[in-house]
Length: 122
Image (cartoon, rainbow, N blue to C red; front, side, top):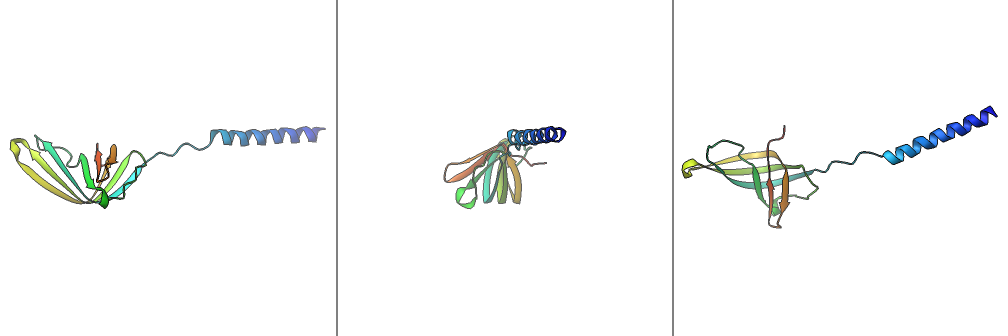
């Protein structure tokens, strides 16, 4: 009788472990969107002249492989151009090749992919 009760206990333990594994499952995957765009433009007002040159992006949708999988939004831009308007109405234009930036929001209107809350990821 001792052998039979051990088998029942062992079978019960295996079933409990299997049920626990099914119930808990794996943690949900974090959404993220990774996109390449050939070009983008940014026009920003920086009265003091300081700050990140690409706080938002605007890129022709035809030159992007954008599919919205949710935040965070990782962009690589082949050629990013930013025109900064400083105090006194002066402007300077900066171009960066292969810009890598991360943004908190992004979307498309069909013609352009637009992103905001952009920064250099650490």
